Length: 175
Image 1 (cartoon, helix red, strand yellow):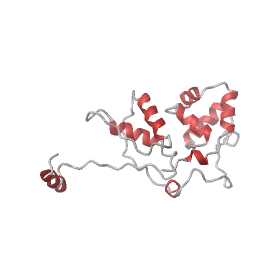
Image 2: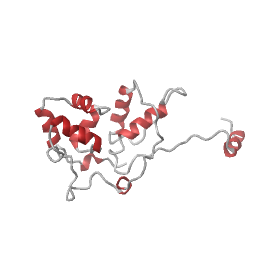
Image 3: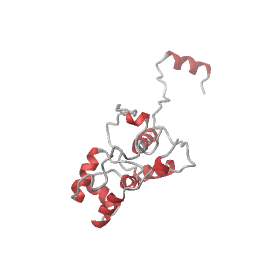
Image 4: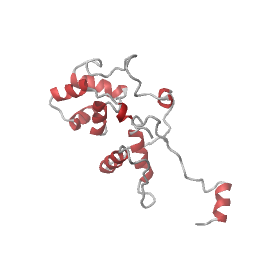
């Protein structure tokens, strides 16, 4: 996985606007409805770009235009936010989550922080069945989609127990 941090250009305009208002990244996240202060940090560092909704919220909060906040991607700016996978308009590659993830902020931040370290290329979440490992992983993966140039993908390893291939493999090797 190639990470964007090496190619990032910090958004000093956004950071300056925040500092002029005397706000922390946590306060900005709270005021615009972003799920984590980590989003603000990434936008300011240039490793991610806010979606249209958050760009509008930032403009309202700071009472500035998108240009004044460095929120427009110009034609002559480096294409650090796109790759063949990210430039295609396609639906999310993740299963739809019908409920919000509540009370797991610490775990989300820990996993996201670890996955952004260059020496960590794979992470395994372990725990008792039903505690939310998959849901936690999906939440973090969706947060980090703009962090990796090659994208982030969900691969379902679950086999339908009613399928003939599952019954055949289980009968040959029960453990």
